[in-house]
Structures are given as structure tokens and as C-alpha cells.
Length: 391
Ligand SMILES: Cc1ncc(COP(=O)(O)O)c(C=O)c1O
Image (cartoon, rainbow, N blue to C red; front, side, top):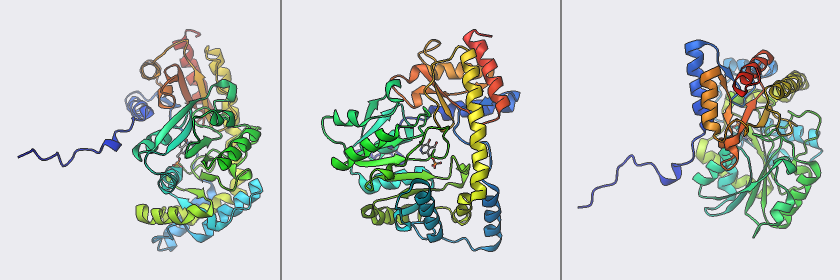
């Protein structure tokens, strides 16, 4: 009789690549517990809480409301508030019916990938890029096609690159401002990409999670150029609400039903307490508070650029937005994983290894997050100088 298979055997699709920065983070936290001198520039989240009005609304909702399941597509008032915010900010014609509230942009991406893609469909991404796209798509059986995007295109893909592909892919993902590079895609180029996708039957998914965090270069929404684009946005970054787990999709009409049915089956609805409070994040008083954070990020960015240059790290992607610097450290290493581990060990500075974002060139790159305290950034640069021999 053949031996039965192990009941706990993991699926083949679960064998996605690890996110190495989580190992760095665990080691940095251990160092912090043991020695109290860790400087965490490795993870990508604001060091500030949600806006005051959001916290007050959540406290009131928790005290006074039942907070049961909401509609699968999200609370109608929040959907309307997000649509109005998008119309006001970008001059689009988005309606509440096109908005689906999701469990972060992470949840949004799973829903749109499931709703629009079949196994084997090709999806084009920029390399370097956010690793969860590649890994989630791989788990869902899509074919990921990475396009090498260097400094000449701000590490962003272009319509010309899409036109050079052997066949139009099923979908393209763009991210602007970008993680890990912090670059903003040129406005006219985004319009060209959107038009190319619409003309070739390719779904454009625009991850706009870092919108609001930019330093002078305009960041357009893909919906300004194409009503057929899907926009994923969220409360985690500009709105300083990572742990509230709330994002949204703005969808062409045809995808609203499939996404809503999938959402109901997969998670019933996004967190009700977060939904009850999130519209307050769009209030002018909250936006003023959040713009204050963006001013601090800008100062932090300038401080870090200066400190890195003094430490001998001066090849950095244009830091247009988000709160990341993508630095070329190939003068010091071709194995960013080992370099980051040694850096942490020797100095307590935790950075994200470039291999997480770029499996080809990432051995000589690191990502630094500057959402934290200015004092920590200055001290991190001092310690880095010791490692690069510039101290
Ligand atoms: C480009 C990008 N998209 C999506 C996400 C996921 O965000 P959320 O917290 O909304 O799930 C992140 C988080 O770092 C990100 O950098």
C-alpha cells in the first residue's frame, strides 16, 4: 500500500521567497532588548500615531457602537468620503460605487489579483519593486515578468518598455511614489503607460499608497489618464495608520461585483472600528496634522542624504517621495544580506537589504527608511561612517 502523504505538507504555492528585512528587524529588536542601542531604519512605517480626530472617533465608536460586520465593500459613508477625497484631489469623476474598502493595500491587491487574473496570466512589474507583488502573484499562479528599471528612468517602467514586450501582458503594476526607491513616475509617462494599457487590453494597477508624501514633484493618479485603471490606495502611510489595516480599491464598474463577492467570502469585511473612524483622516484638520509629518520627512530626507554622502554613500535614487532612500553600496558589498547583518552586529544600525526588492542588482543596494526621529538618523550616519571608513 502506498504511504499516505503527510497531512501537514505545505502547498507548492506557499513556497514564496522570504522577506529578509523581517529577519533584520527581529535581530534589531533582539539587539535593542540586549543593548538598547539599535537604530531601526529597516521597516517602512510612520513613527507617529493616527491623526487626533481618528483616535477620538475610534474611542467613541468602541465605547458606543456595536461594531459588527459592515458591508463587504465597506461602510457606505466611508466609500463616499474616499470617492469625494479622490475627486477633490485629482479632479477625477470617481463615484462611491467604484470604491471598495479593503484590509490595507495588501488586502486590496489580493482581491484585485483574484478578481482580474487567471493562473498563468502575465503581470509586468518594475525591478526594483515591492516584493509582496511578486510573491503574492507567484502564490496565485500568475507569471511575473520583471523589467529592469535603472536610474535613467527613475527606476520606473515606461510605455516604451511595454511596447518592446513580445506580447501585451494581462496586467501591469506601477508604484509611485515608489517602494523601495522613493521615485515618482513622470506625469506624462504615467499617462502614456495608462493609454498603452487601455489600448492593448492590459489592466493597469496603480499602487498609490504613498500618495501625499511627496516633496515638490507632482504625483498624478492613474485615473486622471484612464478610467480603465485600478487604483489601490490606503491609510497606512501618509495617513499614519499602518496597524488600522485599512485601504481601498477604485475599480472600473466591471470589477466591482467580482471584488465585492470575493471580499465577502475571504474576510467578510475590513475592521469595523477602523472604518468607523477613518473618514476623520480626510478632514482638513487631520490633513494639516499629516502635512506636518510630511514636512518632517522632508527635513529627515535632507539630513540623511547629507549624512550618507559624508559617509561615502552618494549614489542614491532621486528621493521624490515616500520615506525611503535606495542607496548604491556596491563599493562596500555585493551581498547586501550579509552586509546588513554585519552592520547591525557592529553598529546597531538596521537597514533593509536590497535583495528583497531586486534579486538581480540588490546585492549592492540597501533601503533606508527616514520616517523616524532626526536624532536617530544623524547617529545612524555617524555609525555608518565607521563601517565605510569615513569616520
Ligand atoms: C508599495 C506598497 N504597497 C502596499 C503596501 C502594503 O500596505 P498596507 O499596510 O496598506 O497593507 C506597502 C507596505 O509597505 C507598500 O510599500
